[in-house]
Length: 223
Image (cartoon, rainbow, N blue to C red; front, side, top):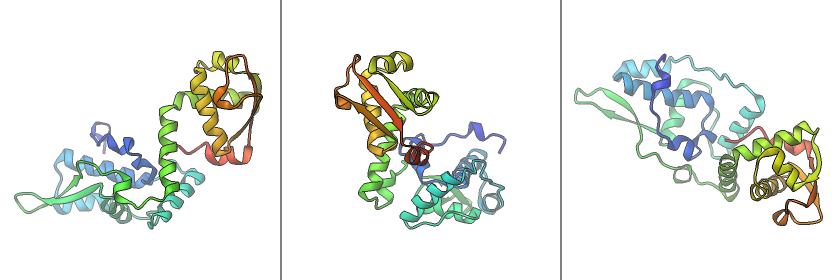
């Protein structure tokens, strides 16, 4: 798959947060189907290429794999062990399909338009909230990065004015309030101040401290 970088996949894979539900090998299988389309590979040859693909997990962080396994299990699916498992997940998720060309050969295709996860799965309220949380983090990714970097560089504890945090991170006060409130809600940090987070102004002093146990569990997963 030397031409993998040139494969055009639907942007909704990221936009709809399908990456939350796709193990690394399954996502690579999805890319391979795009490659087969691009190279016009069909029939038994296409199936053989998919089934014999040497797809490996390059990101073998046990915590990430554990999280993916847990998410799949909550939806009634097993973490894939073989290429057949990967392909079956893509069919079950309705991300790919098959058709016949004029010669009767099977063609693997991306399903367009791409369905949303909530159209395929029966998501409970917690999982719907998880998706909203991930969307929030993606929207405010730079603010998260800057605030968390400042916090980690301060050994997990900061006592400063909101204005100092703004000038140090180049994140506006309004966005600082939103991100801090999010991190407090998920339990990653504790904030102490004379005012509520949503009413903090530049001159207001606050103390932020990491809740190590929750922080280490939550902060590596964006989707």
